[in-house]
Image (cartoon, rainbow, N blue to C red; front, top):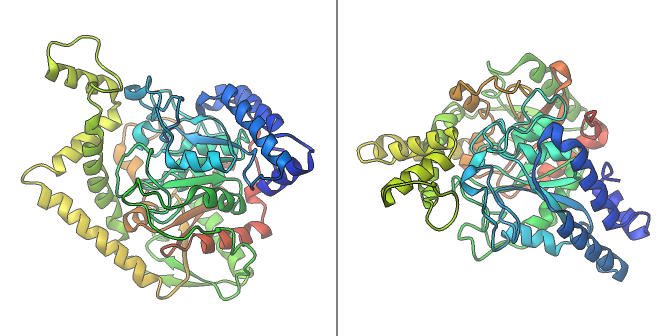
Length: 483
């Protein structure tokens, strides 16, 4: 049943063909059987999952179930979960048991979803390959010698390997969309402020946004509808009416204008990715959409702007991890300052230390105006480019990543090449726009290729509807790796 759509699973639960306890047991068995190969999960929650599943069965029997009641779910280990380890993929938090739930976790509990575990991730969400985790790299279910993408690679891999039908993630510069592309699943990052950041351990506060993974756009719509909503505890949470993100799923594509940024189709895209993207766009045209060329002239500056702004915010956010109140504390030290230095040096991995140092540098006296202020000005120019493009089109499309998943270790010695893997995704976060990646074919070695759809602010329902129409006409999203 876990390989079925959420609608089909919910129908089976209501009809009594399967119970929530049976679904949770099956999911836990799949994790146990496959996690040694993929390393998608850091923590599993057998006892609490089976208890939550029994409660879901009671709700179903009482006729008070919702669309997610009894559905197995995994949370990225960046979301605080009461009474369960929340490590953020870091040695710094290997012993941290959260005393409260993130807002997203609370909403999904209320919806009746059954959390079966917490997924592996790049440490503090810093990375594009899921190789920076203290718990070792997650591997791509399509080829265990390749990366799953990051930083939400554990969640993407868990859905791709059919360990769970849905999972949460976070996206700061592409960390939902890029692993969705590499693992052949659907992933959506909504408009900034749509999903509460309360209880989501911060990397870069003005960029971080919770997102959803599932096999299909239809399933993502159900998950996002349960995750989104105003939260007064998060000052960046938007006060908007609750939305049904599946409302446009049946809307045909006739008359839809798809913008193709010429900057996305220039040099840098691998041939196999280009072929899959071109074929997907041809399918969209066959379904009634038209394509128009648009321009995002400042898109080439998104990477340098992002890698000034994000580390700057990280250096501030991660200053709280000092070994005093919680987290790793060095075993031996001479004084308070020595404890700070040793605890942070031991607790943070190399990539986190690199970004803290970069962030501290660009915020320092004499460099703040030269780097940080200029990056923020570029951010505004990038947002203006998108606004101009949306005068000519309804959605923007292009590759999610310039390549398919690459081999483990291939880019760990070259951070710049690793960062360039986010070239098509970071601009969306800088502008605060919604973005979605859906499976669009396969490249060399049978590895998945993702197509990215970008919408105007609060256009999540349209993006999901567009992707759903594509998925009704193709079966890329329904294919699963051999496990």
